[in-house]
Length: 317
Ligand SMILES: [Zn+2]
Image (tube, rainbow, N blue to C red; front, side, top):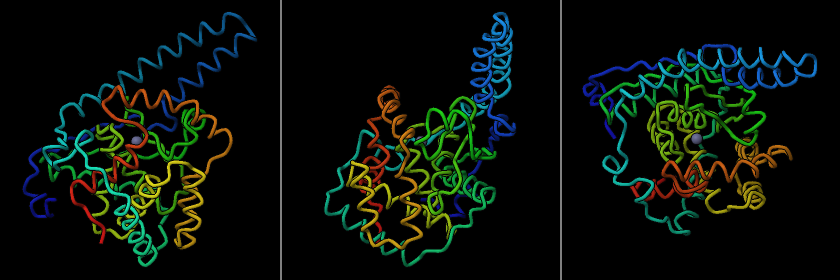
């Protein structure tokens, strides 16, 4: 990875990506969904009302696409992106399988490391978002020579997330770069925001977003961000060794992790009945979307990510 001096000298272009949706109090997509539901319900009062709702929804949809979506996409298309195979010597199709014994070794080293180096996360959403935006931007610009700036807020709630993706740790709308990450993730919060920030910068593949988030945060020199990167790597390593959620939860409980980290890890794994139901319903569609966009499956988050770090020789010591 480039050092700070070479990062500064290599930057020859700054691209400021407008995130207009993220400035609005309500996500435009939420507004559209709510107005559709309102339109259908209004038919119970007056049969002509859904027509007005439909026209209003259409107007909001075009305003959203023209006002938020197109300016965002236009700027992103101008930006250079990292070619993972050329840059790192590995990508989603060129990975070596990490041996099980090496996974176990890494898990035990990371447990010791995050226990020893623990410091309570700040939970300051604004500060974390700004720090993450800066380190991810600097990390990518070290390879591309372009600072692709995506400064915008990260929502804590949205309707789409609550209804359709209640199991997700974070969501990025690829149409306008709007991000939602529910609060209270503790040590996992910065890593999750970094993953969504990578999506916001145009890296939509899950393994790539995992890798960018980890490498940017782990080399940032910021204690809170480095801790989150290590915890992220550990949790997904644990996930890669236990595909069944029940086993994973048991493994976390018996891991020897300190209570504060254990609590945050369990929050990322446990879900209520509605979230479990939606995950079962959405997963086949989600995996189909992944495959259509050149990805493998849900293992890209865990096995793909850890295999990538193993392939490029990024070893935890
Ligand atoms: Zn993602």
